[in-house]
Image (cartoon, rainbow, N blue to C red; front, side, top):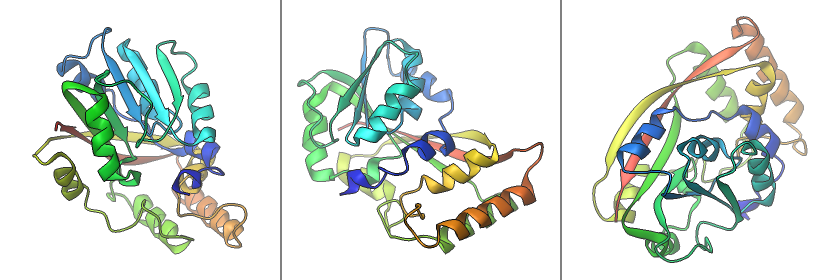
Length: 247
């Protein structure tokens, strides 16, 4: 069921969600990634990270269990001919043993069955391969960001993994059974009103058109955008956390 949570939110996800800073590419190159390498982007979603990884020129495998998200990922990454798209879950990627140099996980680690994934990741990784876990966290350093998060929680229609109690550092320590390196990078995401609204709609716990609160949610978001827009855009500040992990 968790793979179906974004069935009606795919377009909004692609338009409204932030991408990742190009610093991520330097991290990959510093770890030895070259055009001969292979990266498995697991839980690729609509391809926000996948498309960036395509710039490395290596073989990139986009692994995504939701067929609607994978279709959007194909469209979003269409200019890269070094990306392969695979309809599969993180727990059963269908990849060959010892076939990838790096696994990347962007904004998706909290959705995985950790016990099964641990076995699967160790199976597909080459010896001494890396797992890179990325997460964008909105910074509440502006009145806009504070009011925006207040609206999101006011209208939440379900409690999902996206907002449940989850200690990501503890989860990673348990998963890899060793410490990991953490790096942080600033990322600024500028949005039109459509992107602003779609970003809110893309979240797994906010209303969709079938919910009675949908119209009120849209109206409040539009009002908030009008209040803070400058030249028809608003900008959110994110900290992108990049964790370099190994088994």
